[in-house]
Length: 412
Image (tube, rainbow, N blue to C red; front, side, top):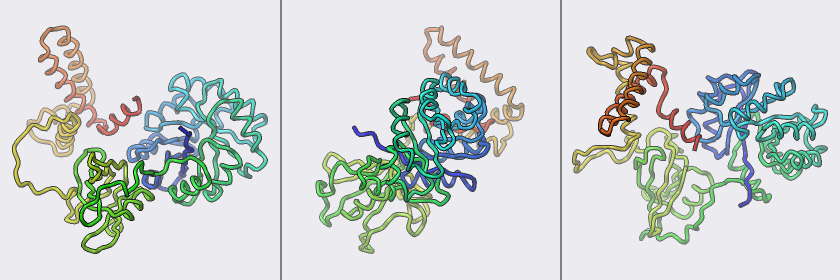
């Protein structure tokens, strides 16, 4: 399969979390955040709200800085000026965190011997090179080719004007493109330009044409829309061929309004857009399942889902593990915010972090002891105790399950 070029918008200053989220919604493959002295707090704020990789750099001086930025949620760190005074930081960071998480930037206009530098960075453990040239890449085309051949590393080229993307890709032969534009730009529009020029990029493309679907008597396709994280059904609507193709083109759910007899992009009026995560056709090819990121509420009544009126309901145990964890965590957080007299949870919060840590340690020891016994039920009980106290600790430190699961996903 042809390697696809990643389009990576770079954001600076302002409101980076909002800008990153907007680029996530508009089809970016990753987002870069750079500052004079990047902070873990800002990286964490950005990372918690996006589903695409985050590359971060600026003012990273030592291995401790690398650790803080990666632990805060960055997928890769970019090492720049510090490498000029301490090349070995690349090896230390690569050995500690893996070379795939290490980018090294290089200014082609200032580096005395770019080819030797690139070769050395590859030897030390860099995973990718970021090339810079403020005055343009016209004189560096052959040099970039040599850098790629000698280092064997993927090369990302930085540009400031998205309108120059296709020309620079043709000139430089980059593997990825970092777009450091001060003005927001349309990522999907840029990707379509790149694809038209013959470059492989990740755009929404259906493996089946609309003509292959089985439509209802009105010539429309039924669409069931789900929350991509919880799988909660949000709504049922309909698509014409034009609505389907617009959804594919923009990455935003567009339906056909049977009452208004017109295309309807969900959110154009309310701002409650639905950003496509996946589209799946059923076995009969007559119903489309759309998994989306829902902004605001899906229902015109103000409810998150259109399905909120119970007709028949039988009590049952909801044993979805993550929903159970989240439900218990929510109760713990509620106790933290609204203390209840006689609550053991509030007792732990009142005693503070040392008491909570002591209980976590004790319960971990109880698991070890229980695991040595043949009674599996005892181990289940001790693990439950441990998880409860662990969630109290998480709540005390304002850590969420989303943050934990995101870290686990990164380790797959």
